[in-house]
Image 1 (cartoon, one colour):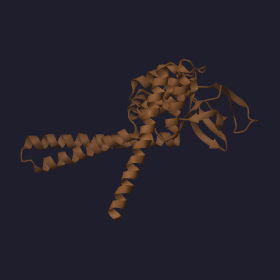
Image 2: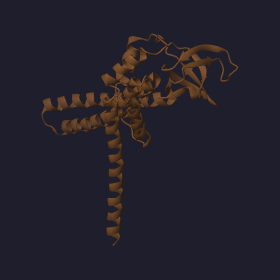
Image 3: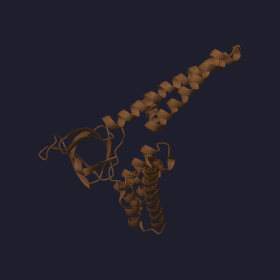
Image 4: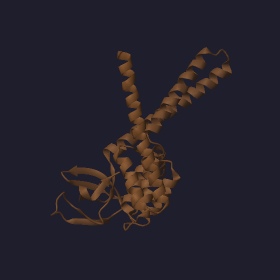
Length: 253
């Protein structure tokens, strides 16, 4: 009797999940159809409904960004493109659309120059998500263990040497994967990024309305958040300039 009740509960849970997923799939399909018919506002509503239900995904965010861009809401488009890129850092279509959308924004701020080695390190670190680096680390830990086992068990010198080389390379990749995973995790926590959503924003020298205006920024610009005080954020521009803005004027990526 107890087993029967447990089975009924399991069936109910599975049915609920299936129904929930089916609703999301239906909304996604409806959003895609609305987009194809150039009904971008309906497409946005469908995609946003899925997001509000707790779903996330690079394709969902990318489609939402496309719908916003077609609806001429550029800041929102950049926001969702950037969120999509965080889930799929190697996606060239997302990178292309971000670059194209950035051509439409008012602010054209040059990035501070950096050393070639620093740029290469950052580019490699950001080529995968934290999860991606973690999976790579686990995969090469397994390969390392297999290589060590082969090296110990084999009686042939050539095989033992090859296994030793594989073990060394695997260990190096594991170390770098863990370093990159840690670096990416800290990057989003220690210095989150945001998109300016308000058409015109005055950056102040202090976290209050009476502070001197240091510079003016506009919708669509990506900034780094370096500090927070109450409802104010200290931001850093790509050129290194810093200032305080109201938190309500930006959206965290």
